[in-house]
Length: 267
Image 1 (spheres, helix red, strand yellow):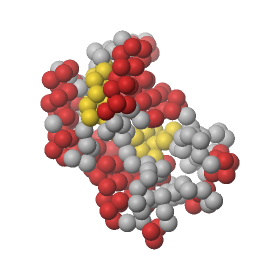
Image 2: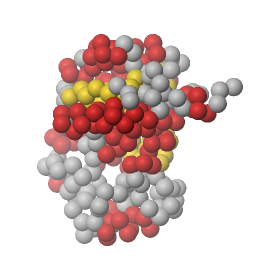
Image 3: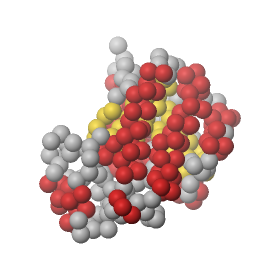
Image 4: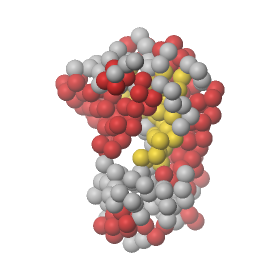
């Protein structure tokens, strides 16, 4: 029987992480690189993407490469596996992390339902749901050839729960319908893919609660009051969940939604 240290070892594995230069994606990159995985980061910000790759190489001695593409472009998405395989020769893990989130400054986003618009709705679904569908589809063959392929979709509590709009009163924060619908769709896509891609590729989701990033105090106080662990998440809180689902620690786990929310959805 393997020791836990062997099961969590990611050496000689390649992980592709969308949004890897962002807050959550960056923490996931660290978690996998710390345990030996080589990293490919997809992000729209070239400077941040390059900077993160340099940090991963310096801190963990792994190979990390930036891949700057538009996640709304199907043509660019379909070229991703060829690029990754040309650079690394294999692909073992895909993390669909990039998303338009509740703080995005888009027209018709952080506003009331009557002010939300179809163009922003379509863009959110394109980035949050369609891009993971396409990227998983085009990467599925390479992941299957790995014989330990794992897909991790980063979802949200608002994909499983309705929002309490009282949390947002008196702040500029919002909870758009498109975000909730896209994350709910991503969770169901996870279940669908887990059956279709089995037994060669495992597919799971991580549903995150709110992450603290200096939100208004009136929001913060009300949020933690509704959370059994009485705090919001930090980026560090996702690292263990990501490593678990990416590695052989979860070799017999697929089609699951791991909720990392401090108990927010337990009520």
